[in-house]
Image 1 (cartoon, one colour):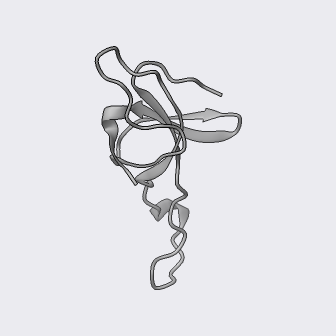
Image 2 (tube, helix red, strand yellow):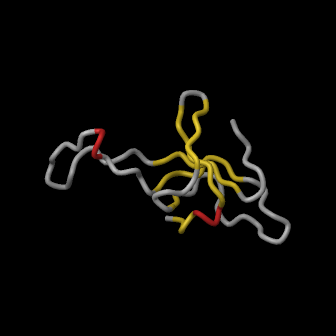
Length: 88
């Protein structure tokens, strides 16, 4: 598994919604990028800024935050902790 450096966080995005509240199936082309996920790994932080999030936390992040990477057949996002809005 990847070990993030400095203030970076590795996140597994929550799956995109498959249906609307009324039961309409959403096609792949219309699915919105999820804005929450689970923290898989965290870096050690910076000298003057310790990390707030930890492995296993469910977090909210910005729609365009992070860089998508593929590891062992799974897709993850890696981003700075400052791109995380909050812990759920």
